[in-house]
Amino acid sequence: MKLTGLRCALYARRSKEEHQAASIEVQTGEGARYIAEQGGELAPEHVFVDADHGRAEFKKRPGLISMLNAAARRAFDVVVVRDESRLGGDTNRTSLFIQDLLDAGVRLFYYFTDEEVMIEGAIDKFMINVRNFASELEREKISQRTHEHLMTKARKGLNVGGRVYGYDNVEVKDGDRRVRVEYRVNEAEAAIVREIFDRYAGGEGLRTLAKDLNARHVRPPRAGKRGTGSWSYSSIYAMVRRDRYRGVVVWGKKEKTYKGGTKVRVDRTKDAWVTVEVPELRIVSEEVWLAVQTRNEEQARTMGTKARGPRARYLLSGIGRCAECGGPMRSDHGKVSYETVLMYSCSWHRDRGPAVCGNGLRRPIATIDAAVIRWIKTHVLREEVILHALKMLRERLAERAKTTPREAPELEAEARKLRVEIERLGEAIVATSDAPTTLVRMMAEREKRLSAVETRLSAIRTAPSVLDLEVRRMEKEARARIEGFEELISRNPEKVRSALERLMTEPFRFVPVETPEGKRYNIEGEIALDALFVTEAPDSGAVPFASPAGFEPA
Image (cartoon, rainbow, N blue to C red; front, top):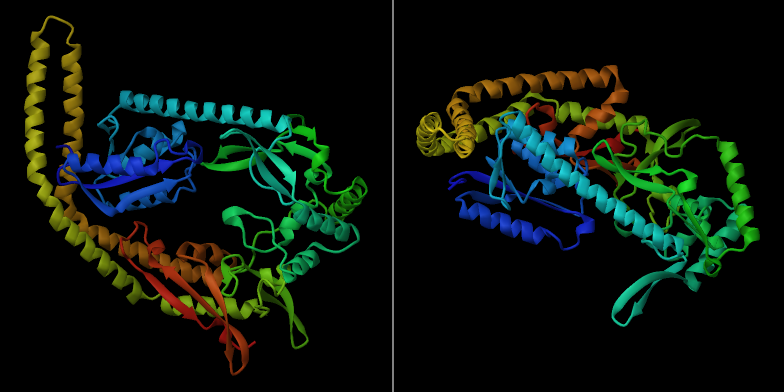
C-alpha cells in the first residue's frame, strides 16, 4: 500500500459559490477513507480545512497556511487532497505551492484519481501547469457567468445581494420556487435614515450622531461577521453617500479581483456602472439629499485628498484592544499637568460613546510603550528562555529521529524491487521491434517512484547525523535575532512595532485597573518564541505576560 506507516495530512477547501458541491464533509470523509485504505496514519490535528475560501485566495486561507507551516517542520510525510482545484485556481501560485511542498520533503497525493504528484522534469511541470490552467479557466468562467447574472438583476432594480439599512429583502415566489428578491422600504428604519440625513444636513457631526443613536439603543445596520452591534462613524459616513436613499440603484462601482494572491476590490470606470431609477425606494427627499451632498463636498474640499485612517505610528495603536469592548486603541491628545501629551484611548468610547464602551481611561503613550518594551527585554529577550525552547525542540527532533527508521526496511525493499523492474523493462525495450510506448511509460512511472523512495530514504539516513548541527544553527540564528531586536529597540523604535507584530499571537488587551495612584492600564498579551527562529520550532511555546505598563508614574 502506498501510504503504509506514513504520517498523513488531509487538506479540504470549499468556496462560498460551491454551496454543497465537493463539501468539506465529503472531502474529509473520502480523504480519510483513502488514507486508511492505503495504510497511512492520520492524526486529527493534521486535518486542515478552509471553508468559504475561493480557489484564487492564497494569503487569507488559515488552513492552507497552517498546513504549509507544519510541512516546513516535517510534522507529516504526506498531504492528501481531492485534486488540484482544492489547492488553488491560480496557475502560477498553485504550481509554486506544489513545488514548495515537494521541496520540503512532503509527498502529495490526489485521492480522487489515486495518483501521486511528482515534479521530476519539464514534462511533469508542464502537465501540472496544464491542469492548474484548466482550474483557473474554470474559475474565470464561473466569475463571468456570476457577473452577467448579477448585472441583469441590477438593470431590473432587483436585489443583487446583501442588505441595506432602511430596506427589507423580500422574496417573490412562484409556488414554492423563489423567483427573485426585491427591496421593500422598512418604515421603522427609514425614519432613522431620514433623521440622520436631516440632522447631518443641519450641521451635526458623524460622531455626535453615532453616540446619540447608541445612547438611545437604536438598532444599527447589520454587518454579518464584521458587525459590532453599534453605530459607528464609518457606517453613517457611508449612509449619507448612498444613492439608494434617493431612489437610485447604482451597481458595479467596484469589482472583485485577485492581486498578490488575495481578493481585492478595485474601482470600475463610471461607464461600467449600472444605474437604475427606482422611485418606490426613495426614502430621503431630493432637497435634503442635495443639502447633504453639498456638505459632503465642502468637507472633502476642506480635508483635501488625505485618506482617512492613517497608518499607525505608535507601538500599540491598532494592535492593542480595549478589554471592555474589544475596540482598537488609538492615539489621542490629553493633558498631564499643563503639558499636552499623546495618550492611548479606546477608539469606540470616543467615536461611539459610553453606551458602547464605558472605558474612558487615557494614559500617556510614552509611559505604556516604555513599560511594554522593558517587559519584553526583561522576560523574553533572555538567553535562558531561548535555550529552554531549543531544548524542547531538540527533544522533539530526537524523538522523531527514533521513529522514522521504522520505514527504512520497507522503503529499501521497494527500491530493490523497482530497480529490478526498471532493468527488466529496459531489456524488453531493447528486445522489441515494435514502438515500445507502453514499456517506456511503465519504465518512467517506476523511475519516478524510485526517485521519491530514494529521497525519503536519504532523509531518514541523514536525520540523526544532522540533528545536532541543525539545532546549533537555529540556536545561533536565535541569538542573532535577540541581539538584532535589542539593537532595533535602541536604534530605531519605529520599527519595533513591525517586529512586535511578528512575535504576538493575538492583540494586546488594555485592562483598566484601580491602583493607589489612580486608574491605570494593565497590558495583557502573549509573545510567541517561534518568530525568533528561522525554522519554525514545533511546540516551542508562547510566553504569556501581564505587563504593568499602566502602573508607571504618569
